[in-house]
Image (cartoon, rainbow, N blue to C red; front, side, top):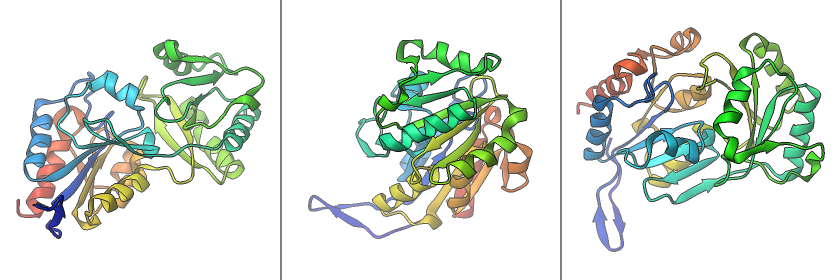
Amino acid sequence: MNSEQKTVNGERKEPHRGLFITDFDGTLLRTDRTLADKDIETLQKLGDKNIVRVIATGRSLYSLNRAVGSSLPIDYIIFSTGAGVMKYPEGDILRKIHLEPETARNTIKTLMEEKLNFMVHRPIPDNHQFAYWCFRTDETDFFRRIELYKECSWPLDGDYGGFGPAAQLLAIVSKNRVTDLLDNLRNKLPHLTIIRTTSPLDGKSTWIEFFHPEVSKSRAADWLAAHLGIRRENTLSVGNDYNDLDLLEWADRRFVVDNAPQDLKDRFPVVSSNNHCGVTEAVNLWLGQKGE
């Protein structure tokens, strides 16, 4: 895991010995919305070994802070599916990407034409704020999210042409509508990154997220690895859902937890579920392979 030693402010600094990246919801976070002490101890152990620890989440910083506060033993957060990268706990945002106004407006128009329920998020760091458009009243997960963010959400009026840059758009659909809809949207919006993920709220609905083409967990991870001087052969990722797919493919070692969809478990090595410290199991297997 060793890389070249660097000089910082005239002093020799030990090189980072690896990069560990874990998804949050359904991977590190348990079903009861708590973190296992064993997984916290594993993160601390990685820090002691000078291995950089990263959470890569679809959540905004606002949402993640509401879930964990500022006490996690990690070094960086890749948030909003890679639209932003932040140094933790200092709060310095090192990288942020948004959709330009014209692209945001064109995407809004397409989602309206498809008669979807969707949200349009303000740029980072205010991307917990969003306008929403409702076409179907039977998408309960859509209304659940609005209720959770009622203090920072508002209806999108008909003059959507006035909407400026956006961090992302997010459509919420029932599971049985996903496959054909995804293909159709990717054909209509080929210039965007379009990511499917299972709702972290009800665990059933599908969220379809629309980002700038340079946004993904893997692109953010690749940028961070280069920023830190860490080679990909010294990387590990752990995930549980479709929005982790590109990150899992990017990392040298990768695992999915046992609560992942079956088609992901068919593609990647499997460790215990999020409720049984699968993150710790993955780290121990990785370190064991490295002779740690």
